[in-house]
Image (cartoon, rainbow, N blue to C red; front, side):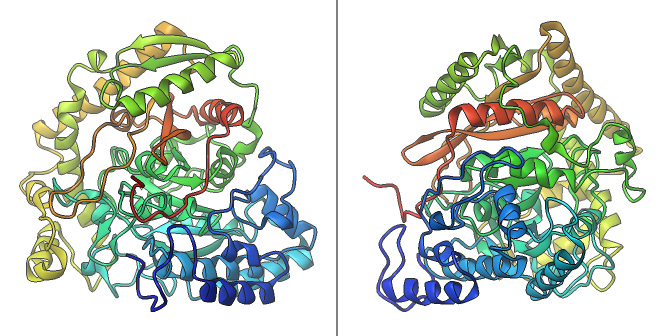
Length: 558
């Protein structure tokens, strides 16, 4: 369970004395105060006020759970550099992800990360910081193109050693903001669109990603490694992608904040797709403030992605301005009882406590809403849309990667030829179904888009308008299930579907724990309502302070 470390077995959540001393010495040599980053994987540091310009972190607490604002304050004060911070995260990845608990959330560390960080340190000294992400290490899901010495594979062996021609727009913008691209995270292969009975977090390239709270529990997918790595304090933040649930589900299973933006707020150019209708790119952070900080660097119209034209005049480069601890006072919050309630008593108990917290800080609760009854069967058409989209969209993407497979049929044939590595746990039923679709001109496809996207948009818009809502809430998911490579995921509940079909935004925020496993609350909004959701989510976070760092337990204590 704990990887290739030849030392004696480790107690859950702890490091061996020899490993601890070795890592502490390495980090102490890198910078004063950084030793605690390796020495205390389960420390719950007091991170203070998350508002921009808030309380700085105390070196005695180490950097575990430190926010982006706190890291920036330390760098501005000369107590920390980007190269020291990057080196510390790389050491922690080695300690926790590859050895120790063996989280398996990172596919590779960027071999240029330290060089990038050192260049940013020189720039800071000479010209000052570019902005709030200057020198901040960020991880990328392995379906996001980076034209560097790292791979971009969607977790599949089919794209190994097939170069990408240029950075994705997301990576371009993160680099421009001064972020350090730290590495690539594991994921559910092909963004979990290969099989109907996959294990979330498994890829042919990386194997099974594990949940940092309880290692035999599932991290959810498809952005499993991004959520798990941020939760384990392996980076300041990470980027994921979502078609339906692939940011918010890893957020809840790993106890972090995830923002699934409006389709078109962030560019999908240079991102391995499922569906141009529903795909979107968004950040993970340990706090709402951190996720909002990263989101601001990702927005803007991009000629490479026509969908972003809808964001003109509706996006912001700094979402920190919307962090408002009093935002729930007077807000009208709907509760969608058809979205995940009544399926898990543990989840229901956490949600009732969360709803009471919303009310206590001044929100008006509009209860017993039902989205499904308004959608006119939209959910039944979603899969058809995705199957049609995937066949065409993946071929368009693959055409930018000469030297590798160029069509969905060639991916299917690759998997068959490498079945021992790619198909040993589950098949490619969705690939096969997508291959049978006939193109965007098929009236069946056009009807499915109208019913799926149109039905969900109409339902959510009507509920917001009729009830004068600022947001709708529902459970993001249930406590994480035990990973099962034989029979696949034991997914119990979720609430991402309506917003996914509509292309509307979601914000997932930690709401409680059951048996040591986190459960998040989802805030849903209408198109380009990210400022409102960030304000409301931040107010909830400040009122509840639920987030706790993981303990890396081997299995559920009995």
